[in-house]
Image (cartoon, rainbow, N blue to C red; front, side, top):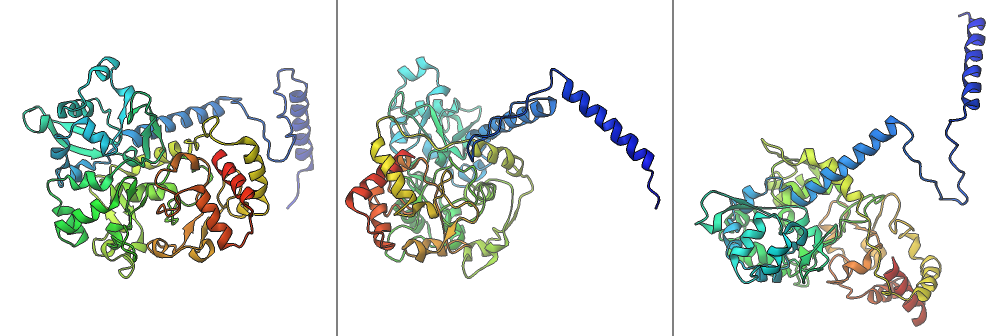
Length: 447
């Protein structure tokens, strides 16, 4: 094939003219500054309509994701209200009883004059708070007739039920929302046990109602067992509850696998929970749940191939994911740790203790495949064996101070950060001195 050399030279000349003109234009944007150190990048501001469209789309996704996180029930009211009739029990709870069970009140949703005069011992106040959509993670549905159950006809839950709390600015349990924080006060099992009809849950678990109630009451505050409807294992071999601590939903940007045992990504787990745990209406696919040996209930109930006629989940997954990635781990309160000791502890973390081998800064988890065997971390395999991975995820450490209630690790087996450090010192034969351990704890508290 012959090459048109004249066309090439004309094209090259035209390109040169364009480049020269661009270089001589006084209004041309300055090049981005070169980072001074590795890892530093100067912010890139919106320079044109395309960039601004991206900014607008990102803001819209955050707003829609926040709405889904806080307010979407995914039509779970068909189960909690329609099947369990939980709304009938909630209608008789006073706000004081609801707060004692770990439920929280969004002060921003309640007019100040109403909040100031509310009778916390009157169940009618609970119904009023539900009408205002002020009970975090719980949505009430009301009919025209107020005579039955104070007008409450059904009840659904949202992501915020377990993964939001409040700052207690007005009173314990009443304040501004803290999305992404695990509600370690919430007694999910005790609340579910209030349901007038637990037979639908008993049928799914293939046990009787008294057994279901016993299992639910064994969980305690801040715990939930997402694997129970999949494998039916309610208790560990040592007789303790198989429920795990509610994990944080913040600080997940850049983190590969979600949950303590790395079932999947954030949107995977959102889809699983919305469909299988919250009993919403949607679509969910995971053929790993067809393994009847490991997940007998999931296989028997076809949970890995769920497809409802009306899907109220899938269209929210992208926005929900985007919003969760925007939830940064909370910074520790001023004065909550010794800064000098934390600086020394950082040296221990990155050096002698080798914590940074897996908890790689600044993610403080493994970049990439963030899973390890039970043997690697020195604990039993019970919870790992309940997941398809048979391993444990390297939990991101940022914000660890805010989830100390209930203890550390998936089951709270270590009551304090000091106990965690002691465990790894023994397991990995680190030979840390008491001073190094103390400094390391202060560093962990600073994240």
